[in-house]
Length: 285
Ligand code: DGL
Image 1 (cartoon, rainbow, N blue to C red):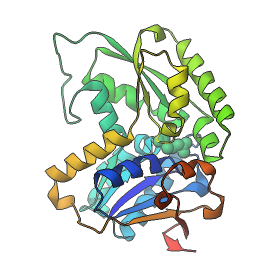
Image 2: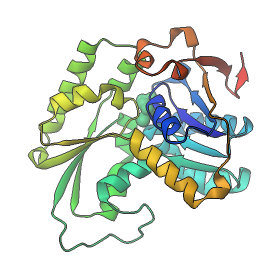
Image 3: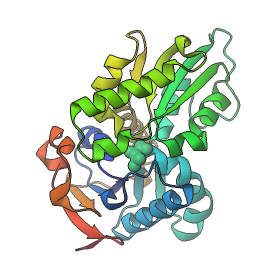
């Protein structure tokens, strides 16, 4: 069973793509709706909540876990991989959704240890829209520029967006929030040079149309779900020992009240709306 974790409903955008790409694997999704959004929380909280979720998914039988939350991945993935998993769950792999996005932007393999110097590479400018916590870690700037020093990264925090999407804000509210963040980005120095904009929060694909409309037409808008699905397929091909055949089941768990999950998830097929409530520790309520 493959575990998929997000602070709330954003990771469903990734889960849907994973299920399409790997229809016979079993997925267990956990959305920590009761404590979403994470992006405005401090790093210690995000770290602690993410670790709790990972432990719960491991206890539920997951040996491979995808952090379908950029905020959780930016704050908690490295410490988990370096200091927690090796001692507590050495046979478990935890992957982050930021990796395929960084690979797509840099056109470099994640494991590239030295910056790639390609004579033909032109200077580029890429925008990254993310939560305030992700922006504060600077992880996208570090991961992109350490591989591709010719890329300038302009980060734009969107403090209210994931929360508004979780809360079921109207399309007009989402339109005006996104337009405001795009305006802020475009007022940053060098913004006229942007060729691509990465939606580096798994909630933002729900606002893809608004970003597409607000950004200049020549800017390529990059989203994670299909990239992550392709990367996971590739990972399982390369690491068959991490693969577990299944029956294509989808189990959705939430720490929140399933009857109060908002309308945004109605955009997804019914199988992605059928949440059961659990206590922390994944015990059914
Ligand atoms: N969907 C998450 C992300 O990718 C978290 C958003 C939030 O909870 O603030 O960053």
